[in-house]
Length: 484
Ligand SMILES: Cc1ncc(C[n+]2csc(CCOP(=O)(O)OP(=O)(O)O)c2C)c(N)n1
Ligand code: SF4
Image (cartoon, rainbow, N blue to C red; front, top):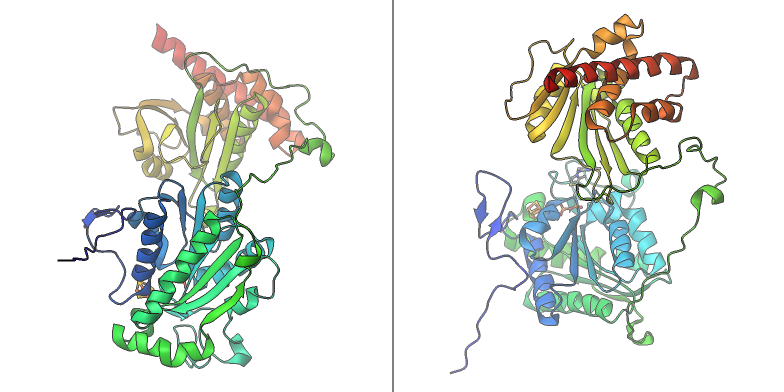
């Protein structure tokens, strides 16, 4: 007897292991009952299985309810910043032309904050697949108006209903993009009844197939229910799409040039290597201390550093200075400042990486070294320091030390030394000197030579140099004590 067996697609995880400690191991998704995202995840996953693309596919999840795509898809996953998925997709596809890049976005993400990104990726005809979930609302944040919200529709931000005069009319994405030369395939489908769901599945399949055959940019807009945001039950939500949404967003293909373009092999986009400094006519500031590093043999040198303190202590400058100096010394470096309420008196911090190898991410989740310039910063970032790591802390402001016995705690009275120099703001450079001496990633002389690259007030160069020397000397003394 013939029997159909329905199984979960291979490229969806068996169990959805989440970060949360409350429900770490789940068989259900986080989506609300009746939500359209689940359907579409299934189409994408089944198509990838059918076409044998699991090892080649990179799924880009957006900011929105589908942000957790990586909990479900057993693929390469990248989670993009709000609206930036088309730019991320562009970069990934250009860097890995043989990969299958799927940008999956909601209407707030794709047509709102990321409207420009979407438009230009389509206009450039990037050969990627974009799946656009149009549920006429910002689902994740509680139902605010989206660019696709219908006129008259009441949302959290249009309590009296959207009006053309105040908010403009709903943006019809596939019609808009059809006026461009870039796209090869644009279609709007809907998750209403079985027939339309089947069509939606076929459209997703075609958009992915186009990429496999390297035909060009494809986007499928899917009218999807958001029962929670619409305050409807799942059945009414599907009817509402049919009766109301489809009047404004008619289903159908708005562009199909697929047949005009022969299948081909994806080729890398030629990348022109240019001497940017020469091109931009930038003075070579590194003159005087040209990179002098040869990569060390055996042990790889480098550091994942967090620098933290309060606004006004020159925390970001300290991190930037160490990164600048590392760069001048031939290291790969990154500096990631954290801006925010910290600027107004709370904690300020930055992430710095200095490495002999290319740096994958500027984020420092776990640090090897922490420079803590006040107590709140120490408390906040000490847990991220790896066992055996080093914390340099300003003992003038943190007199009671460090409450961890598995790390090396080094007390540097940075503020006191800076005060002795008559320049309290140089406490950061005292720390920089101590850091240079402690890590020996670069010499103290080199650090001083690089000062003009990041200290703008030239009149303060001399006192900053002295502060570096004092920090290094203090560290030297501590090291001597340990050795003897
Ligand atoms: C830069 C930035 N701005 C705003 C937000 C808040 N935010 C999170 S999700 C979201 C809207 C998502 O709506 P949509 O793209 O329609 O996806 P849905 O949740 O409906 O699937 C917003 C505005 C954010 N996280 N980041
Ligand atoms: S809020 Fe809407 S889009 Fe988000 S999970 Fe719930 S039903 Fe889906």
